[in-house]
Image 1 (cartoon, rainbow, N blue to C red):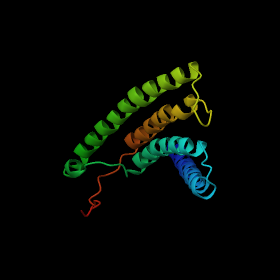
Image 2: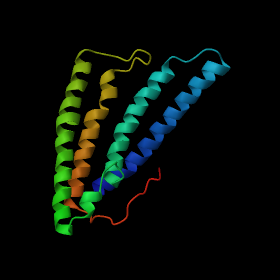
Image 3: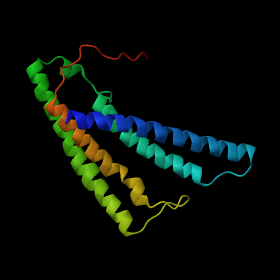
Image 4: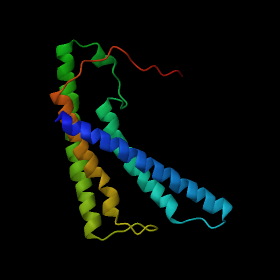
Amino acid sequence: MQALTQWLDRGFRVLLVGLMASMVAAVCWQVISRYALNDPAAWTEEMARFLLMWIGLLGACYAYREGQHLGVDLFPKSLSPARYRVWALCAHSLVILFSVMVLLIGGGRLVYLTASLNQTSAALGVPMSWIYMSLPLCGVMMIVYALDAMLHPEQPSTEGVMIDG
């Protein structure tokens, strides 16, 4: 399982960098075509929006895997190691439940509906089912990462990230 998740981690990093570079290129081209050429490209805004959706969902999976997602850790850090494992098991179980119900089932239905209606995007003409495929894909990845975290639990960190405000 760890070999699979390590392989997925490398793939995610490459994919996320590629998606981000594509989004930056699309936005740069939009600015150049609008202000330098006085002929704005119609497809760039839609492409950037779809790429941002994919980056957000896949980035959330990767952040969850790395333990860098947003969370309040004051209570879990005060638990004993045995209770922390129970707490983490419950938290990962809730992630799996959410991933199955919302991302897999809900996202899968959305993909099926848009595919059966042959819905395409306005500017790019891309099937919307391809765009919405990020939801079930993210669901599968979150489940894999949650199962890996359940099989290989980590001890709570005593360090925290301080945000100055």
